[in-house]
Length: 290
Ligand SMILES: [Mn+2]
Image (cartoon, rainbow, N blue to C red):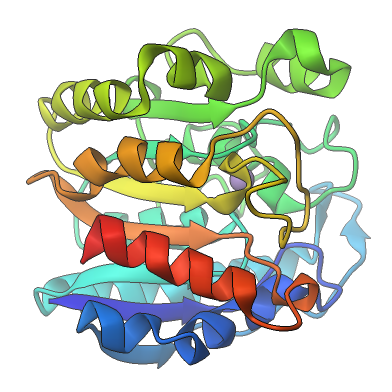
């Protein structure tokens, strides 16, 4: 059964709106419309906004604490035969998710649907937010205490990660810099290339190839959408997917027999005062997961 877990922490430590996203999506009817069970919020918020000098990461100790709490909740949910739907928060929640898989001795690949590669390191990250760098940490690059949260790295083998929907290097020098850190072992495809090849076709192809290697997690950073389709984000960007394109891409991944669970990150309800965008997010999730 699909079980909703709230992970209302964001890696800025500054009480940004992502922390209110689980409740905003619940209020918009997500749990009822999916016929899911709600396991409540399972990890504390991060309230320390200082960049810790040794690790280079904001709120290092609290991030560890929240990640471990989420890991325990994920492990328990999976042990009880639930399929988790984790509502962030921002993308740093992946540390806890893959930590939870490790706690019960399970390994999974990752469909990483995101407008960014999240692959800075603790020095190159402009602001020290773990959500800038969690994919690097998951695949083995990062500070002690996070990269080895529950055991030896990597939490995900790089050859079992597919990055889908980042922006093009030629469009922006920051994009070019970040993509330069992504190792060749990780397959990636930018949003415009996905659109050109056909979102549904890319989704089916990525489903069969990663599922052929074993179980896989589906991560959805909503900033993969174009800023015009969804402006209620912390870091909106042009050049992203349309709502239809998003649904076509994600549907085959969400329907995969290899699917272990799903996470949704970066919705910013503070930029959605009348709930219009929360309703769009819920509609799209019901179309792909329902
Ligand atoms: Mn992200």
